[in-house]
Amino acid sequence: MKRVLIPGAGGPGAVNLTRGLKIAPEPIFTVGCDANPYYLQLALTDEKALVPRAANEDEYIQAISNLVKKYDLNFIYPNSSIEMAVLTKHQAELGAKMFLPSLATQQIAASKWETWQTWKNKGVSVPQTIIIDNEADIERAFDQIGSRPIWFRGAGIPGRGIGGAALPCSTPLQARGWIDFYNGYGAFIASEYLPGENLTFLGVFKDGELLASQGRQRDSYVIPHVSPSGITGAPAICHTVHRQDLNQQGLQAVLAIDESYNGVAFVDFKGAADGQILPTEINAGRFGTTHHFYSAAGANFPYYMLKVAFNEPPPTLSKFNALPPDLYWIRTLDAGPVLISKDELEAKSLI
Image 1 (cartoon, rainbow, N blue to C red):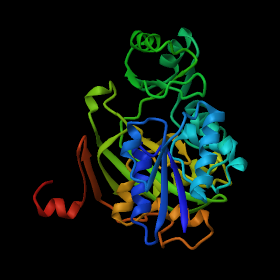
Image 2: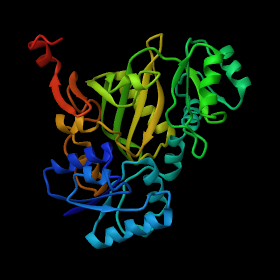
Image 3: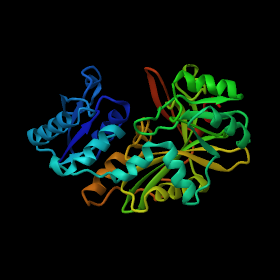
């Protein structure tokens, strides 16, 4: 039997990962651990354990190692970039398999600026972007980047980056105020504003080969009013898409970061004013938060990747477009989710 440890088990991405394993066609024993005693109560695993924060690296690794031994676990399945990096560094000490991108790949993906530089150097089409190290760089951004507004956001640089903090700014004064609020010089980037659709590509890879993937479009967000940009990262409505440009550019974006990529990747794209789509960031080694959409619709990527990790034949999924187009996933705080097709919505005269 597969015996799986799920770190950060009370977080939404890990809860949905657990849901995927619970509906798998074989029994899978799960242990969830979390550093937050309250969020741990949200875990859906068979057993639960409180552990130190991953920032307390030695204590965290010792706790993980103890859980592996106590429950005779044979796989560790993180869905948090911080925990994933610590676990990757100490993988040889843990006595259980993992199936993750290399630490170097994780580190590139953790920095939006380093990701952009890597893509640019590998010939991937990317939005105009400038690192903001000082006030002069704000003026330079408004001189060199043609769009209005310009998207100022945290660069995600490890040790310096600010993860959220995205704001479309129309004037240097707005940008200065936003960056000053976060004391963010050296930790912000300015990018061409992309007004088009918000897309994502999720794929499972082994040794640089794409095995299965699916694209979707985010249509609206949970509590958008709390974010100045209206984008919170938590989609309220999204739907599956079949787009050749998304499929090909998603594959290109992942392999430009690591031509021998292992594990899951999802890449965010935005539509430019001229209709092309451009990548804005990559999440290496984790599924995100709302990926149970795919599992509920019939493409159980968490189980699929677990089978790949154990060198067992995975369920049959297409390399591209693993699901039909126009399946909608609808949710908000404490309501849903609902999986419904566009045809059903139209039949009910709802759209």
